[in-house]
Length: 110
Image 1 (spheres, rainbow, N blue to C red):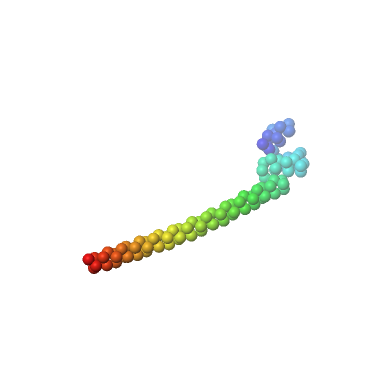
Image 2: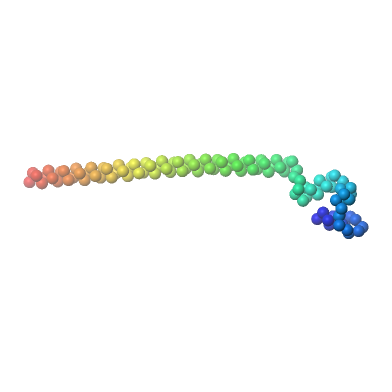
């Protein structure tokens, strides 16, 4: 792109000399060329990108925290379910034991 602009402005399409480009375009033209080629970024653009990056980072951190809370809640629910299951097993054992005792007592009476 830079070569095409220099070649179009000069009478002889020779390889562009950096010094002649600087003298022809001046500092403003060089800055414009650097911005257009992506070598130089305006301050507002950098600030906008940094702000966008910060907002996405904050959203990511908030989402990670929410996922951690969900994982903790699921772990606690699993612990409670295991405790309930153990209590149910114990209760079933006790009921079976009580039924066996009652059956034995009834058998002794007869």
